[in-house]
Amino acid sequence: MSFIRPEVREGLQRWREVIAAGAVIALALWWAFTGFGVIRWIGWALVIGGTALLWAGLQRARFHGGHGGLGVVEVDERQIAYLAPVGGGIASLDLLTEVSLGPDRSGLPVWHFRTGYETLAIPASAEGTEQLFDALTALPGVDIEAAIRASRSRPEHSIVIWTRPVAHLH
Image 1 (cartoon, rainbow, N blue to C red):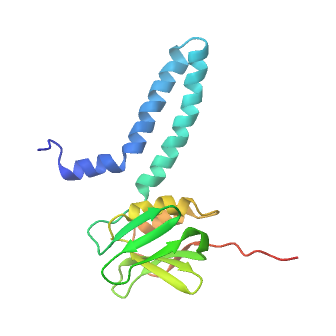
Image 2: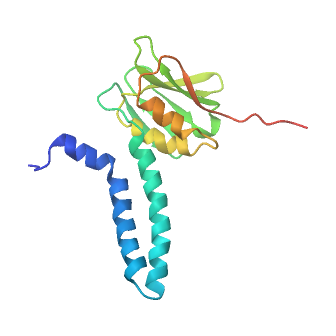
């Protein structure tokens, strides 16, 4: 039996990194302003580290993951796996050429991971799509803000989040 409503528990779970970073920053500021000697410097170092954690936590919390949709997403060792009764598959982060988010035929948002001639399509409502945030941040030059904006809305057209940089031969 839980004393916390499920929607409150889900919100706390989503914002847990931000809450933890805020607690670290509060303690660090207390040490920085009231401590002496080395403790003061440790406090200021923790303020800097806590601020970095706060920024990462804010981005992760703003990224909208799905629940209740068809299939399950798993990200493990640079592999994105979409497990579904129909249309599942695997995409390697090392082989990706483009990541986009666009509408399907019914207008619902779908992630598209292109690897050469193949495309892995993952509904944005699939369980575990919050793990895609970690996969996206591993891509060099990804537009995380575009991914966050796209994940929070129903796009009318395909939005490219990342494309592999073209290597120029001289």
